[in-house]
Length: 242
Length: 231
Image 1 (cartoon, rainbow over the protein chains, first blue to last red):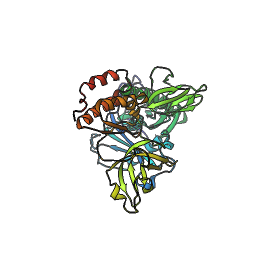
Image 2: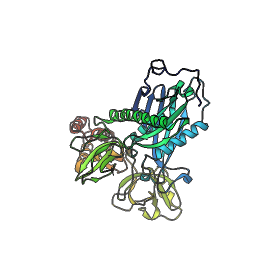
Image 3: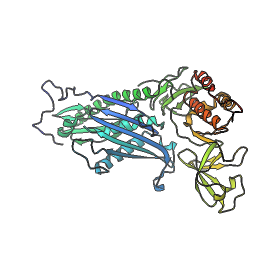
Image 4: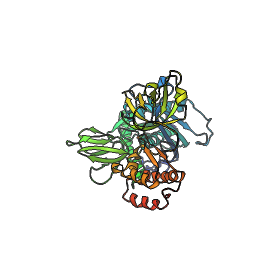
């Protein structure tokens, strides 16, 4: 990610190509409980990304060799639908989806109170129906809402958010062009109420000052997304229907 | 940080949300104490009883506790025990020594096969969530007739009502035997019309048993109930 010097990603007026300010998120919509057959589910539209997450369990962990006597395991399967991008993706697991499934599971294990369900498994399925940039963050956000919807005890609602660097400027929430042609990408999983970080990855180069600024943007973005997540859960359940 | 409030008003909280200051209160289920604050760990409604603050979860898996009365289904049979589906994350184990019959080693299948349902009690749950069931006790038996319904585990109390008054009223109206298992399984036994009406009433109680309008809704439904002695 050295950047592509001749590609303009910022306008003369300092705004980004889609008209956003450098610390502005793409529009986000979240719905909870969209899949009637799942124990918990959520739909997240983040810019042009669409992620659906379903949670099943807790259930007995199989095969037995994956069971932990003192806690549950979280089995995450992240997958991009073949039609999620303009170029068809070969269906099934690949190296990228394995990696994202693993880091998502590790991030979720740090917020779920796993000790509550020894020897069991919580299955989280994340399906990306439309991909722009930042699908792992949209997937994590969807998974957190789905886990809350399923009644799984958690220390906080995990929020996935990313910032990066384009044309030497740190920006919040990269879109596709910024992700492809920018200089750095910093997706993180944040616990908004405690300010803890559950996962962090970095692609490209950031100086310490740029990193701190990017994290500042990430915390700001996480607070915005958290409000939308809480609102989605409230809309589903408030009114005493459940 | 958004704040759920402790008070008379029913408030929805989400995981990580601060419910209020600890200030001498005890922390119940669905919450934890952190930095002198009570933090919700589940999506649900705040409840405060006797200075204990807890969260009534909106969705919850059945977690067996010793003494629970449950309706279980045989999932697997071995020579000397049955593995029972108890509608929870783990199967329960019913050894032949805790069955109500004298069972010879290797003859467990002659008494109950896969798919048979029973009323049982949770005898023991250890720290690894190994669940042992017993059928030795009053009213514990194999279920040979009736209809079994599934309701959300956290709605079981709504079906029972305060001091079982909702359950007694439903039994009275439809003239059916209704047994509510702690694991969210409900057995209804009686005439076909009675069972049909009871299913509607139980679903109504599950959906709106906690609302003030429930009594009126049930009275409206009562008009369509089969008359006693119809069957």
